[in-house]
Image (cartoon, rainbow, N blue to C red):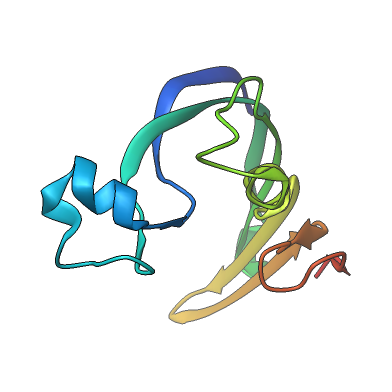
Amino acid sequence: MTVDGYDIVVRHRISISQTFTVTAADVAKLPDLAPVGAGGVVQYYTNGFDTRTKGLDVVGSRVFFLGSYGQLSTQLAYNYNLTSVPTYDPTVINQTRITDIKHYAPNRRVNLNLGYRLGPFEAVVHENYYGTYRDEFDYPGQLFSAK
């Protein structure tokens, strides 16, 4: 059995900014915007926010020798993640994006693997569980159920 805990901080994470509508004044200040033109939109990559992910992985495995009845291999894995956005630039990301960063991947996951072997015969079963998640950008306000 193994147990791993982690606390990962990413400072100044790179992301694409929100869209900005170019004005005639913008083109006058920065001639490189001329191909976009007034009324066009631009985005850029920038260091706009920090993230912190805390998590726990627990994995247990065991092989059972069943004598003349074969061998059963088992593995059970559990993962828990919690991501936050402690600081951010609101001109780079908004609350919708923050919600997606925190909840797009399920916070909980469980995997069960069973393998049975008897001579040349082998059977394997995999079962996966994923907790609830959100996709606020594409489906605002909807919480997708665990699978």
